[in-house]
Length: 76
Image (cartoon, rainbow, N blue to C red; front, side, top):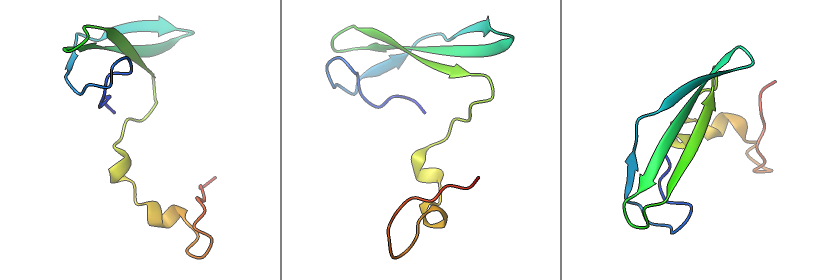
């Protein structure tokens, strides 16, 4: 999931730079680089191989909640 705001200043003007791929313990990691167009800070998001990327809105949260208790339930 792409960051929505800059962690340094809170602005939403982010530019995604060219990602970097590295091998760590026989796993491919992708490092996504972002630059804030307001404060010019650069920050990274690291995604290890096999980690799923998805939007939180894509998940049907009703299947993970108990209707009466409103607590999150996760599948094993």
